[in-house]
Structures are given as C-alpha cells and as structure tokens.
Amino acid sequence: MSLLMMWIAGVLALALAWWFFRRPAPSVTATSPAAAVQRASHPAPKAPGTTPAPVPTLREAIAPVPEPLPASLSEFQWLGAQDMDPVHRDTLLTAVRGIPKPPRSMQKLLSPDFVARAGSAELSDLVMGEPLIAAKILSTVNSPIYGLHTPVTNIGQAVTFLGMNTVRSICLQYMLAEAFKPKLAEAQRSFDAIWKASAIASELCVRLGKALNLPDQGTLSTQVVLSFVGQLATASLIPMSGLEKWLERGRLERARLEQELLGLSATEIGGLLMKSWELPEELVNDVSGVGRQLVSPFMSTDPKRAPRFALGYLCARLGERLALGQLDSLEGYNPLQDGGVDTYHLRASLAHPALAKLDQALALPELHAAIDQMLGRVTAEA
Image (cartoon, rainbow, N blue to C red; front, side, top):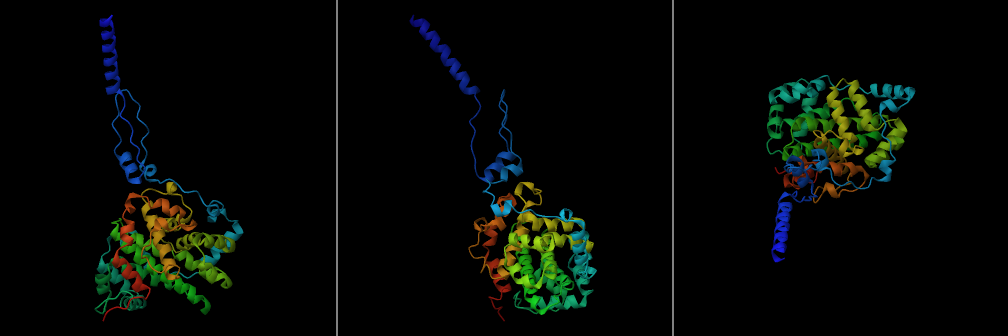
C-alpha cells in the first residue's frame, strides 16, 4: 500500500512540475504612458501554444485616461464652410476677399522650398526687396525687446544675432501688417494686442521647438504666426461694439461668438483667407490644424502632426494670455494643470513622447527672461 501511495505521489509531482514550467508568464500592468509605449514597441515573445494579447498601437499606448468631456465642449458644434447656407457663405467669402493681399514676396517666404533650403543670404535678399519691411525689422531687432548689446545695421546681422526662424517670423508679421490695418482708431488696441500675442507665441515656439528638438522648427513657428491670421481677419469683420469683449473671452467662447456673428470661427475664416491668398494648401491645412486643437480629440489627430499641433496651440494660447495680462509670467506654469475647456484636448495631446520634456523646456530661465523682455519688464543693459 505504501508503494502505491509513493507511486501516486510521484506522478502528481511530475504533473505539477510540467504545469508550472508550461504556464504563460504573468502579465505586468503598466499605467504610465512611457511604460505603455515601451510595451507597444517591444511586445512580449509569444509562448508556444498560447494566443498573445493584442498589442496596442503607439497612438493607443500614449493616450492617457480621458477626463470627462465638459458639457460646454460636447454641446459645441464646430462649423466649416460646407456647413453654411450658400447665401451666407458667399457673403462671408466676399468680405474675406476684400481684405488686401500682403506683398507678393510673402508667398516666396512661405513656399516649402524656400523654408526648407533658403539660408541667411537668401532670406536677407528677400527682405531687402521690401525696403519698408526691412526698415521695420531692423527697428524691431534693435528695440529693447531683444536686448542686443551691439546695434544691428543690416538684415544679415539680424539673422546672425537672432537666427533664421526668429527673423523669418518678424518678417512675416510685418508682411501681414500690410494687409491688416484697422479702419477705426478704437480698434487699434485690439489689433495691437493680437500682434503682440503673435510675437510672443512665435518666440515661444522657436525656443520650445529648439529645446524639444522637434523637426522643421522654422515651419512650425511660421504656422503659429499664421494661426493669428484668422483672428486679425475676424477683428476686421466683427462689429466694433463687441470687439474688445470678443478678444477677452476664452477660445471656446470666442469661437461660439464668431460663429454666431460671422458664421465661422476665426480658425476657419483664416483658412478661407489664406486660400484666397493662394498660399500652399498643405500649409493652410496645418495652420488650421493648430487652431482646431480646441475641439480635436487626441485620437483623431495625425500622430506625426500631433506634437506639432499641440505645441503650436499651446504657444498661441500662452501668447494671448500673456499679451492680454491674463497670465503674469511662465514662472511655475504647468500646462497639465491649466484646467478648463480651452485646454481639454491639449492636455491629452501633451502625453506624446516628443513632448515629454516640455515641462523642463518651459522652466528654462532664458525662456522666462526673453518673454519678460518682450513684455517690457526687463530693461536691456547698455
């Protein structure tokens, strides 16, 4: 009897050992976006005789757990030109086309080939072809905003001191200024605030894009400047009585008011205007993509463009808030803690690995010093 029991025990021991070594390895749960990306990029090897669990795509891996969608955002319907009735659309298009075109040289400045290949000499030649704009650029470069210790006397020096991207952005702003001149003195303050916001947003984009090592930094800063075209066009078309109150609102409330008064939001109006200027279609679409981050869920954005759109939208919003005095400085600013409907979708987009060091880039002392200087809070040393 004892031999039988020993034989049974031996069989059970062998069966238990076989089961232990054949079972699948236990799964490891990782909740952070970085761990999820690693899991998506390096899936566990398939065990013999087992069916592996579905591996998440990169987009799924970096998508954070969503916050509840605010009612004001879920109830808002973003309209495109195709959503308007034909008569209203034609009226708006006629008004948009009445805005003067900027200098022809702006098209060359924004052409993909020029942005990708032009050096400082080509940029200097282009700017010098517009003497009035060249003079304005030199005046801006020598102002206390940039705190240069040595006077700059030509565009080539400006490029050397400030870099191609900054000079291109300043040049673009002055070229656009030729198209947007308020007819009433009372509107000048609103236009000045928009110009100031675009300058700050451009500087933020240049510096943050460089700190994050994003590709095509020149194109991105250009897109951010052009994202203000719709606001300038809206400021030209909106009734004077509501202009200042319009600018002080948040982005969602502004978009709602713009659609009520004009039929489309400033972002869509800007797209129509840039198309009438015959700017490259891809550029117009990307500029519109920056503005649409207000209502674009992270999962619906092209993964390659997602970090660029998110950074562009963030810079544009910060530029507005700083220019309008709604934000004193970037000291201690954390976009993930910047709650509200205007940044609801942005907060999800910031989980992208390309923006992982954004908090560190926003904390750079030289960035704070540059923005304070642009806000007139720092006097350049003699």
